[in-house]
Length: 173
Length: 312
Image (cartoon, helix red, strand yellow):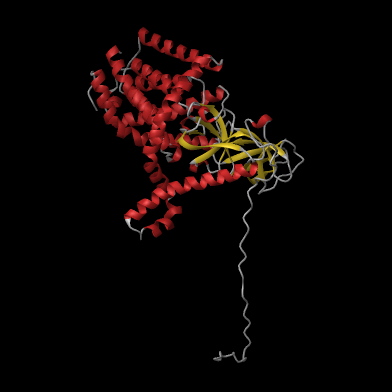
């Protein structure tokens, strides 16, 4: 990842972080809503190389950890997102069946959101956090996966356009 | 071609993971720099969130209307007859009235108990992506709010101030899974520990297994030393069911919180408790059924019914 790519990517993620904190959290959507930064980071990673995916996860994770609603210690979301974004990028890299098909990217992102939250939950339990009833957890996990499946196709075109302009090495979806 | 990874890539992953573990360790050890980062971010975000709250409110109201469509159908049917201008005015007025009603009821509650409070508007609701239940209010340390202060609504307990920033504060709701509060049952004074479950339902665990708890019992906060984090006597909720397992060590009961956490608009932070414990004074009155008068008419077969006569 060149300095130019980093400098161009950072304001995008900063903007997404601000939008998430200022607007998305205000909407009080049913079934727990969605986390825009998480969805964007996973789509971005799905279009990138594994190294850039890991760096994206690191940056987005720091942002989510800085969020006032993050209950865990600093680095909790970062660790989860490094793993999740690297895994998503690794699965898609070099496989045009995944990378070239928007439906597969949406599917990968939705599963990524679900598993990221599950890993976050398990890690939280290991760090001694309280997570509430099983029913509520399942409801929130299903809700966030549902919202990710709704939001991802809407964002995919924009993110694909920005990604291809910044990295320039891949065909736009 | 499937990616196989190289040494540079593996090194990068290792460096990132080690950095993250280092951050987690520092935060768990309470290093001030990490806390300062979060505080600074929240201070910088507060004005943006206030603008966001103002901008998103029409959309939020729309989503709320869609969510509660079944309940508001009758109201919508009545409003259909009115013209557009009047309807718009009414919508604006409704928002203001709801906030005013919440403010009035919270002032009544605090006034009855003798609490000194600071009122605040809810400017953000925490994302449940992280499995927490929090709200952000638009008053902070500049208004005298500090962490570990009780937060009230007009119906009772909302939660406790977790972090206080210059012009905002993060409130942990009573429904948060990690929320715990010492509670007593109004009247019988039995004590127990109430914990949040992520929904409007809480679970009460009685400390003494020989005591009994009944459906409909009201729960109040026991209070803490110097009124922090909890002032005594604040209504929490009502027992909805009791779990009497024969082999259980302690008796538990399900509790429905008085406060509806999804409709919070205005809340109050108790900055100073009452000089005396209000005891059971804040227990909300139970609804009384309205008596319906009945008239019984006896009809006798063959009897001549009296005919009305005109009188001057």
